[in-house]
Structure formats: C-alpha cells, structure tokens
Image (cartoon, rainbow, N blue to C red; front, side):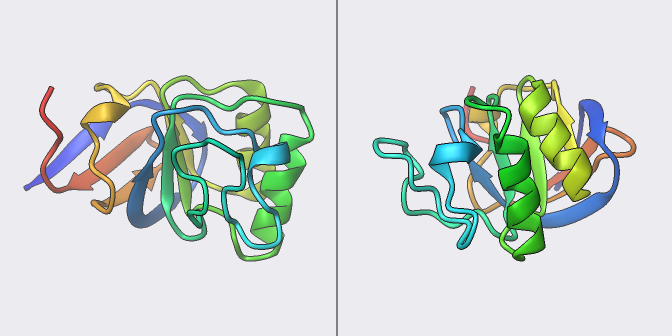
Length: 139
C-alpha cells in the first residue's frame, strides 16, 4: 500500500530512492565526505553509510554554513542523496538542497522514527509530498 505523506516544500523537483533514516542530525561540513558521500562523523549512527542515491531523512542539519557547499560538492561528484526529508529544515540544508537541485521537504505528518530504512519512496519537493511504499514502524 502506498501512503501519501504530506509536508512542506523546501526545494522543488521529484526524486525516488530507498529511504535512509537517521535518528540524529547530520553535519555535512565535517560529517560527510564530499568525495564519496560516506558519513564519516565519529559516533554517528550512520557512520560508514553512503548517502548517494538514497532519500535521506534526518531531524535537521547542524554545523557550519559551509555545509551548503558540501551538499553542492556531493551533487557535482554524483554522491548526493536523491532527496532530503527533514523534521525541521534549517537554512544550511535548505540552501544546499536548493543550489544542488535536490528535492526537499520537511514538517511531514509523522515522526521520522515511523519511517523504515530501505522503503522505496518518492519525494515531490514541488508539492511537498512523499509517496511511501511500505509498512511503517510502530508508533
């Protein structure tokens, strides 16, 4: 069953991919290798995981404004997430998504913890929606 989950549009466009959910914020400046797309932040629950081609869901971004340019570098290097879903977008990630043309939404109708890793999703940043093709984690 496909669920239509509504949110707020941040960056336009439409992209699909497997969902990768982080329970913790992500810093793109020091937490993601722009050459590989691998999360390198020590102690992060997704450390060692590649975000390339994934729909990356995480609470919010953290760190320096340079993180916007790291997202742009990831996009130029072919290692960016296909789309981004945040609980609450902040300027660093929103700016990076916009300049990198990565579809992005936030403020979805349910907690990110309900979303399952690996579920096939499609994010429509223009409409502020996500099609979710799978089961949810229990509330």
